[in-house]
Length: 519
Ligand code: NAD
Image 1 (cartoon, rainbow, N blue to C red):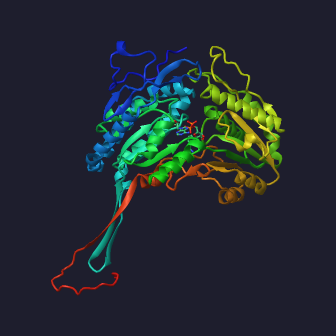
Image 2 (image 1 turned 90 degrees about the vertical axis):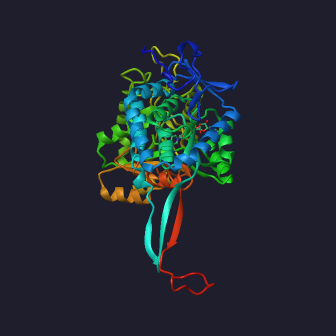
Image 3 (image 1 turned 120 degrees about the vertical axis):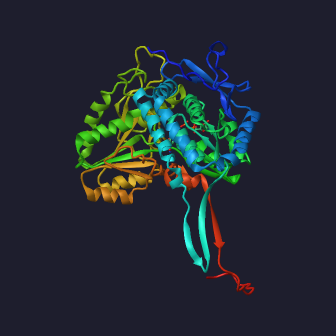
């Protein structure tokens, strides 16, 4: 088994001397440019889900430490917002170079703390890196508008200004990509930032914060605090925080959306999902089945855009046996093993929850075509592994269908027609993504028009847009009105100021006019 370390060497941390490192190491906060050990007496173990080894301990940041982080961000804001946008962009150019340099270290950290395969962990970093690349063009993205001569001698222009201190609250499933959806856009727009990583896998955020400092981000522009509900509530309530980016479950997301909004903040909240694939009998069978297996079981189903439900239309239901064959061939192993197709799920609690939802499906009449619940992985007997699991004859009233399972479980349903299939999908409360597999342009176009999901795939199983578009979940999968990254992301992290100026020769003077000005 390879030797694995969670946090690497903190170039900026108080743990610079190996002899002074507690074992397991404690994850530092980043406050005002310094990586500092929390004075908290409460820590949570970060656990390797393949082995149950404690890889580090994450603090429940104290109130004073949280205040210090917000205050550092507030103090850094005036100088940072007045730093030329070209300088801010150059720091992002440097950051993307450093992320590329350290991508293996980031990926190993992700696999150690989150469990996904090393190859998938590279993808996690890479999809975040693309947002950093996009932020390198911020001068164009943040451009205002200008209309000359809106009235005689009068012009109006708009400026997109940063908001001030912004915050990000992250889930466990993409430890690098999701922090990178947040802070690069926010800070390159001229904001300062307080990041709260997932308490389950905070290591990648700390490595990214180190890289951001190395890239030249001034002290206080990016701060990192750890913890759970208390620090999240402190973020929602703090008067100095102007906007919150959240990604995670619906329970937390709706709580943060309402609590933060009630305090007058902008909130963008990306939440849970139940992504469907509709398969028409005219689809290419091999490509479709491969796509279903990859998108259903990749990352052990722990992606918000994982395909968790297949609706087979007409005779395509005969493909279920072949789907099972392909899923059975996947190799479940520790993410550090080169042959692993899928790694463990994040925790024992997650594993129990997934088992319970599978059993509830069976109890309410679904048929189990493939059962991955009793899998044992040699050498990793204590890991939270679940093999690919497939249930069929699932109906919309079942708990396993209504709840997000967030594990390697694919549900199969059957429909008579494309219309029936679309109405099943639209009846589900979530609206993150939906895909269709077909060779009919007419069917694909109907699907694109009628489907109620924010991200639509046509023969594409995981249609997550690159950063020049935005991540556009809808219905219960999103709250707020400005999505993550792309133009919407820049709009989220900026407010518009309009300036109306008059420059005309006024030697003739003008009469006093009390009526509302018109042109
Ligand atoms: P989670 O909601 O449990 O945790 C997310 C964050 O919220 C963490 O930082 C956590 O500390 C905090 N938190 C959790 N419960 C809280 C509470 N009651 N009060 C205040 N803060 C709380 O989510 P998770 O299990 O880490 O992530 C998985 C979920 O995230 C899934 O539902 C998945 O679909 C969703 N997700 C959505 C997207 C998307 O873009 N739509 C992307 C990734 C993950």
